[in-house]
Image (tube, rainbow, N blue to C red; front, side, top):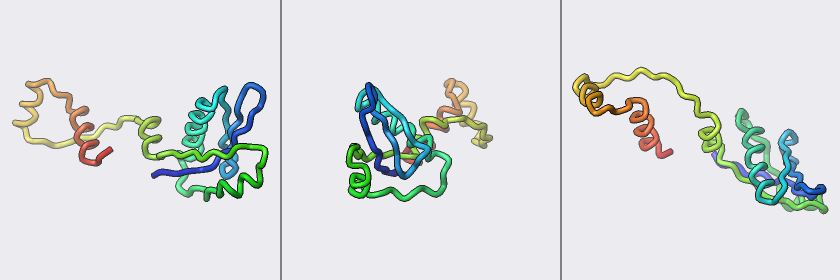
Length: 126
């Protein structure tokens, strides 16, 4: 799931302050434009990761009129990728496979968990 929200960027001393008008709990800062943008992506993920219903994003044009002294930047996030990156807790699953296949894999010192993970990622194209 990909989402895009406008953020306001404004210089405050040595830092760039970043705020998301549509998501008041999401705000951050950075010393450079690159750092501020990276931090904005991260804080957007933190603010949205547990939500099921997402706020409607305001138009960048409307926000620019509301905040004429700030720069409006669109910040996008792939929420599925964010969750994979930051919430990769492993869980135990029991599987059933033919005995001969299990014996052959054991002889080759194949890691069953890693093999299943790799196969699922390939099958799901993630």
